[in-house]
Every structure is written in structure tokens, then in C-alpha cells.
Picture: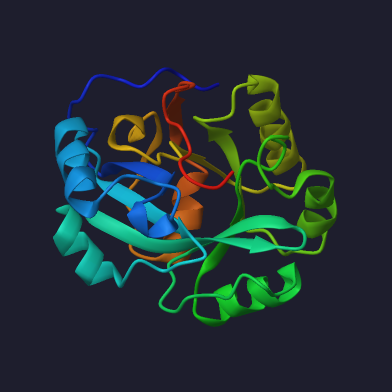
Length: 221
């Protein structure tokens, strides 16, 4: 069950608040600068953000964390012929012209994990009907089970059902493209120190989120 976001307050000891999916101006369709992200993160007491710009790696973990004033997991939302995939814990950009199988190989080759964002939202380029086969083939490490910009909650619930069917953990993200959208959805989860512990911690995460119609896309659809 997804609860509405809580007021800004510290999380329980040993746990962190994580927004698993958001975008900066480097995405080309976002208006949020790193300075604006830093302001929102501080105001909302978000501990970790996954910066997942479209087909672009915003920087390294230390560099981004200094700029944002909170821990940053570097990621990339990568367009493939089988739908968009998110790579997390990346150190190198992954080209967007590759088949999904090669994208997964490149993400995992640098120690990253693969997430399927907004898979059933018909207004975005998610994996959709291809997700089952990708999960069965072991290509997916986590499924985004709540995206704050998905207007029909049934599409989020469908993602949750698929994740459960394959025993995969779920991520939650604001998919913010503007400062106001940050924190519309997040997880409160055990702290982690890398990809493997992140995946393990996801299984004990508490999701919070709400639809944010103002978290618009900018630029190209």
C-alpha cells in the first residue's frame, strides 16, 4: 500500500528517505537545476536522490553529492527498443541506441542495477507488455511500482503485481522534472552502501507517494 507523503521530519534510526527517480536540466525536458534540487532536498529532509537524466549521466557520486548536499546515486534513464530502462549506481553513460539486452549488459558491467520505470503508463515509453519476458529472462533487478506522474494508479498497481510475480523489489520515485515535483514519491528504507545492499533494502522499504499533476514534462514529449 502506498501512503501519502509525510511532513518533513527525520526518519527512524538506520533508515533513509530515498527518491529513486528524478531529472535535472541535463535531461533536456526538465527545468530543475542542481541548486534547486539541493534546496528541495534540504527542505523535505530527503537523504538520498537517484538522479536519472534521460540518456545522460550527470556526474559521479561524490561530485553530485557535494552539489546537492545529500547522497546521490548516479543513474540514467535510457531509451531502448524495448522501452526505457533506468541504470543506477553508474560510473559511465550508456548509449541509448542499443538493444535492451546490451543496455543491461553495460549497466551490470559497471556494477549497476537495472530498473523498469513506469512500465505500464501508456503516455510514456515503458517496457509495457515486454516487461514479463524481460523479468523472466533475468534482465530486470527492480520495478518502479509507483511513479508520481502516472495519472491512473491502476498502471502503478500493475507494475506492483509484476514485481511480486517475479519476486523483484519495487522502487518509488517522483519522476520530478521541476523543483515542486521532488519528494512527491519516495521510500523510507534501511540505509545501504552499494547496489547489492540497495536491492536488499528495497525489500524492507515503506513507500510514500501521491499523484502530482503539476510535475510536468518540458520540451519534447
